Length: 359
Image 1 (tube, rainbow, N blue to C red):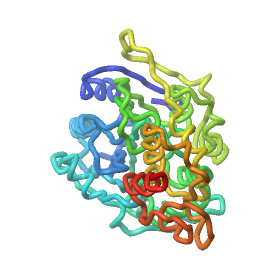
Image 2: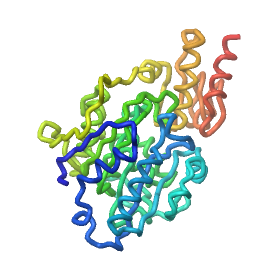
Image 3: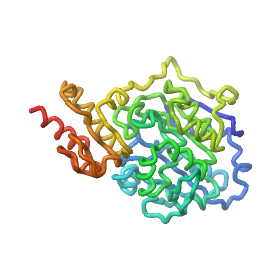
Image 4: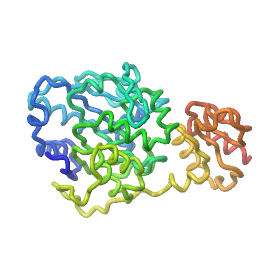
C-alpha cells in the first residue's frame, strides 16, 4: 500500500468491511518484525458507545486485532485518552475493551515526553512515542470548532490533558498540524459508519456504513473534508500539516479505490447547526468539551424559541480569565456577572442558567 492510496468500502457488516480493507495491506512489508510493538488508537473522546456517532466501533478493533494475530503479531496495545473532563477508564469500561484481551493504556495516567515542533512544546505519551507502528481509528465527525475531526485531530488523544488545554490557547489549528509532525500514524482506518456530522461528542448519528483506509493522514483528511462538503482550506490544520511535511493534500492524484459501493444511498452533509449557533458565543481559546456543552445548550434554547432573547454573546474560553463580561460559562469566565460554574459545565447546567434569564 502506498501513501497516495485510499481504499473505501460500504457495508452493514463492519467486520467484513474491515477485513476487506485490510486484505489490501501488505502488513509483512509494513511491519517486518513480528515482535514489533503495535498501538491501536481509537476515538473514545467521551465515555459513550458507537451508535451515538461519537466513538469507534468495537467490530473494527476486534477484526483488526484478529487480522494482526493471523499474521503473527501479538505485541498489541490499545492507547487512548478521552477529552478533558471525561474518564478514559470509564470509556474503556462502557465499551467493554477488556474483551479484546490486549493491554489498555490510559494516556491520562501515562508519563510524557516534551516535544517541540514549530515553536510549540507539547507533552506526548511516552508509550505512544515508543511504538513501532501506530494504527489510528478515528471517527469521521463534525466538530464545533474545527468543522471536522478525523485522522489528524485523532492524535490529540496521545497528549497530556495539560497539552490539550494548551492547544486551545494556541488556537487548535497550528498545534494539531505540529502534533502530527511529531507523531504520525502509520495506518489509518476511518470509522464513517454513523458519525455525528455536527458534534464531536455525538448525539445525532448519521448512518453511511462507510470505512476508509489510508496511510497519509493529510490525504485522508482532505478526502474526508470533501465528503462533508468542505474544501481543504476550510480546515486550516490540513494545509498546515502539509506545509509541515506530514503528508499531501493532492487528492486529484490520489489512488482512490472504492471496493464496495453504497446501494441507492445519498451521502448526507453536516446540517451547519453548530456554525449557526456559534454566532451567540464569544469564544476565546475555548476547550472543546466546554464549547460543545454550550452548543448543545444553545441548540435546546433554539428549539424552545428562547435563543433570540439573548441580549449579549456568551463568553467562553481561557482568553476570558480575569476579565469582566456579562454572561460567561465555565471556570475561565468566573469574573462574568452571570457565570455558569464548571470545568466543563454540563449542557444542562448552561441551559438551566440561560433559560432562567428569561423567566
